[in-house]
Length: 205
Picture 1: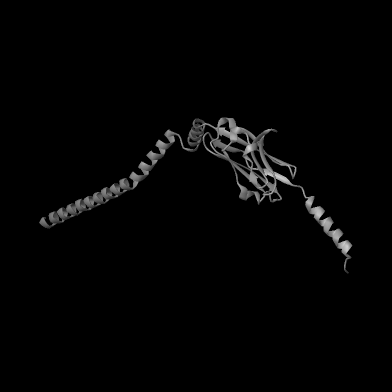
Picture 2: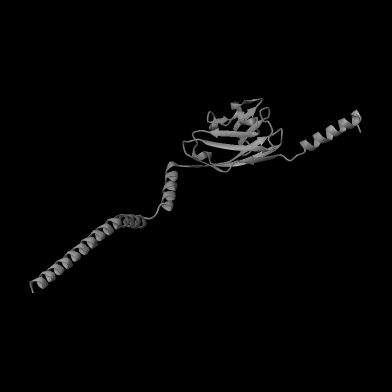
């Protein structure tokens, strides 16, 4: 049974409307930690993915502090805060996959905080967080991690002592075996000597 052109057009429109009505979510990356002077990569992705290469993509801090602006298929540094000028890079290749990836170089403690991706044409917002630590804090964290994962000095010494003992045991056992064999041979030789002496005595009598 066929449909009239009008009915087919209505079905297409209803189907398109249903697809476009699917809920659109923006999923942030896990909170990012970076070391002062290094770089940090922040990311948000759409689910389901939508090509963002022709959309406006704003990375902001708060409502008016623009970290990076992408419009009309290119970056717009004139709209960027001076604090982030020449320090941000937006991955244009990821935009086609519905992913907005921003790298901030030479991060400082003032870069700490929440960052927002705003897609005005889609009316979608995504939040992620950046924590910047000093090199001293990172080293302290590494020392703490190493102290919790490695055994205490006393335990390390005990383990070393056990290894030495285990290494000596085979040698000691070998020496004991040799001594036992020598004692057995000596006792046998002594008994043989006694036996010959007795035999000689009996012959003499």
